[in-house]
Length: 224
Image (cartoon, rainbow, N blue to C red; front, side, top):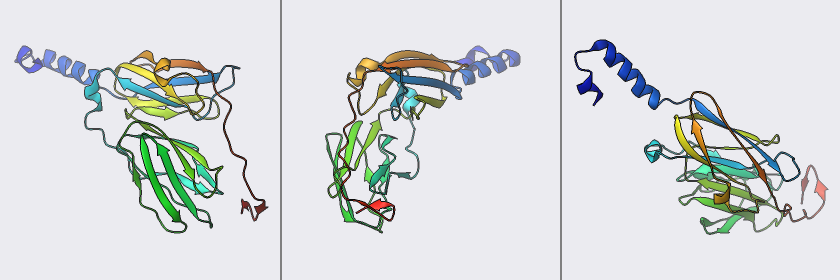
């Protein structure tokens, strides 16, 4: 132990303590950049960093209130990554009824018709992707990705994402996207995280987006 080896040596004790703290320091980051086969930035991709030292996952708690809203008969955001064990609220901001459901293996659930009241939150206990829909409005499709690591981020319109406040160390980084053709495991990359930001890039082959056309006609800013 450091305390045994450095007992009676104040200078060496301080140096050893600083080294120990540095080994577990946070504040490092991974910067990801994703493009499709045509070089266009990929939005709504989830980038995940799994530490090789699984002790770094211990004691991590899901964040506070997580929300996926229903606005103008769409799920907002379209893709929402959450950590295993998180509870997600699905408030209906529309004046019409919605019936939220999923048949995905990672989480099957239903929130029967509701509007104007707060539905019970859904807890996501198993990792993996979950497709959510509305029984009333078939074009309403969204995605929840339940991450097995607390270290993740989602790409913006520029195809970039930053995973911040990482403990230094070695990670396996991977990507998920709802239109991705290859298996998620095939995207894995080893990344060493140190004092400087680490960078990683992917070029993904994507399926064409599957979107059911909206029904009805606009009235007062929304669809009936």
